[in-house]
Length: 320
Image 1 (spheres, rainbow, N blue to C red):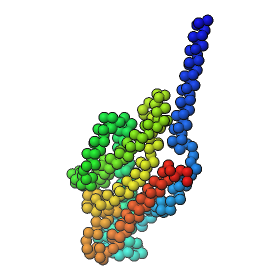
Image 2 (image 1 turned 90 degrees about the vertical axis):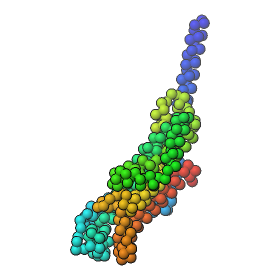
Image 3 (image 1 turned 45 degrees about the vertical axis):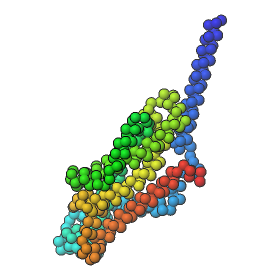
Image 4 (image 1 turned 180 degrees about the vertical axis):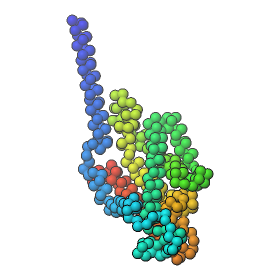
C-alpha cells in the first residue's frame, strides 16, 4: 500500500513539473512573440513611416538617385573615362548635357557613375561597422562583468582619438585607393553601434521572456539570436541609416583632399576637387555644382529616411 502511495505521489509530482514547464514555455513564446512584433500593432511600421512626409520625399529621392547611378550604363551617352580633346572644358550643350571637364570627359556620365561609387562606399562602410559593432556590443551586453568592462574601455580608447585624423593618417600610410578607404572607414566607425547595442542588451537580458527562456535551458546563442537581437534592431537600423549619410560625406571630404577615390574613377567627392581653382569656381560652375547638389540630395534624403524610421520604430507610436 505504501509503495502504491509513493508511486502515485511521484506521478503527481512529474505531472505538476511537466505542466509547469509547459506553462513557462507558453509564457516564453507569448512574450517573445509580442516583443518580436508577431502580435500586429494597430498601425504597422510602414503605415507610420508613410505618414512621415519628409521620409517619403527622402525615400523617393534616394530611389531616383540610386536608379540613375546604377542605371548609368544605360542612361549615359558617353563613357566616363573617354576623353575628347576637341571639347575640353566645354559648356553644357545637346551632346554633353553637363559639359566636359579639363580633360574632355563627359561630366554627366561621370556624375552618374560617381553615384555608384559614393553610394556603394556609404553602404559598405556601414555594413562593416555593423558587423564589428554588433558583435562586440552583443558580447558586452550579454555577458556583462569583466567582459563588458574590457570592451567598453577599448571603445572609450577608440573614441578618445579624432577619427577623421586617424582615417587620414591610415589612408596616407596604406595608400589612397577605394579598398583602403572602405576598410579604414568601416573599422573606425563601429564604436557608436557597440555602445548602442550594449545598452539595449543590458535592458533586454532582464526581461521576463529572456529569464524564462534561460530557466528552460535555452543556450546563449539562441537567447541572443532568437530573443534579444531582433528586439534591439530598431535603434540599430536608425543609427545605420544616419551612418550611411555620414560615410558619404566623409568619403566626399577625403576624395576632395585627394585621399579617397582616385582618378580616373569618378566619385562625387573627387569631382568637387576641381572646385579648388578660382577660375573653375567663377567660369565653369558645371564642374562642381552638379556633384555638390547630388551629395546634398543624397545626404538629406538619407537623413529624412532616418527620421522617419526613428518615428516609425518608436514603440510609443504603435498605438497611434
